[in-house]
Image 1 (cartoon, rainbow over the protein chains, first blue to last red):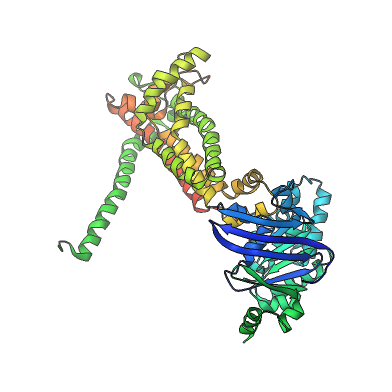
Image 2 (image 1 turned 180 degrees about the vertical axis):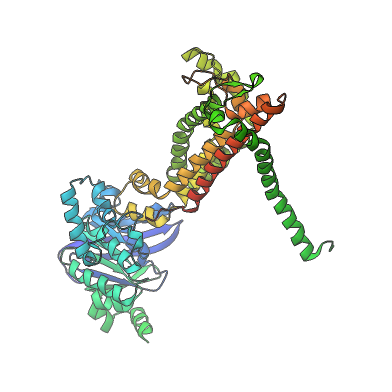
Length: 255
Length: 285
């Protein structure tokens, strides 16, 4: 592992069990600030589970147990004063399925900030414009902010979900296969947005599309059967992987 | 053992199915034939808005009963809807699934208790309590409202739970992921998304309350007058029919059928609204 400063998230000997079945095995991963970390691996390799453990979304279902540590800015997110609500405000997530909430575009974006108690209309307007612009959606929806978010296309809804997270001004953005249901053009929009966003955020991108990791990620991690096989600079992983499994996966995909 | 064969079974089942529908059609036809002519002969306005109900002198104004039915139903809503909706939210969102799967059928069992039992409890337990605390006869609009409020709970809770659970998990996850608490998610998102189902449950409850007869006869006191306070005795439309049908003849009998027509129309309207509301489970503006 490279010597880096600015470690945003650091997992130490992370083991995750679901009904006593070990899903993640001894994950040690340092995630650098203001970079995009791509996570690749076959289905069932634990990438999504890993991602969801970073803002404790796994807990919504009973039966999960965590061992080891996940440090966010050196604070253990599972065993500390940091409560899960403030954690999720700092670590936002965009899911694989683009799902707008059943309310207007405007309300979708301000949903999270309203919860934080911001009521000032001018302030909210400003947040809406800023977040939608950052998600490359503003121009398409600025004239119809009162339209239900559910009326948007899948690609637009996914960017709306991203805007919703951006409005919270989190430190970290988690993306769980955000483009799996999208057309190539929407995918490009999202990827462009991410590249722009890493200036201000730390981004973790789980993807089934290896090419996507190659395109946008600064570093790439390869998961297999619940284990972190290898992590490194994207270029190095895709050209000279250390482990045979990584090479097989990447070449298999391109084969 | 081939007695009927495929076609035979199909035909038999369709006969059974249609006989159920035709029973409904016949009931409707029957009360309309018996009631409508009187309604027009006597005058719809006089019938609905006159307070003079003296069958022996040929006076048939059902306004007191309409008013009683309305107030008892409204009271039942005030008791049943908040309890029912709160119960549904609690069971759907705050209890483990296993608990809900035990409690929900138990609540639905409330609907299986015969209404005469509710009436009995009302007379023996509730009416004396009302008499002691608030005075008055005890058998009153208030007693009817409370008993009916409890009787509609299974309807309200069961349909509300179904519509809350029909809200996609992705909405809930999206909200929680943005740092909302469970309660914030419930009141900012889930209730709004499940609104039409919850409204439907209340409307169906209203239909049930306005149509209920036995329990109401037992606890509301049945005097023909416009209730001025919740503690007054009152007679609902259903109670009026049930109490007088056994001895009514001629015009009187027709007037009771016409009362049935009014009830029938109100309940058809309520149920139609409810079924439209149920059909669109999640609101898409």
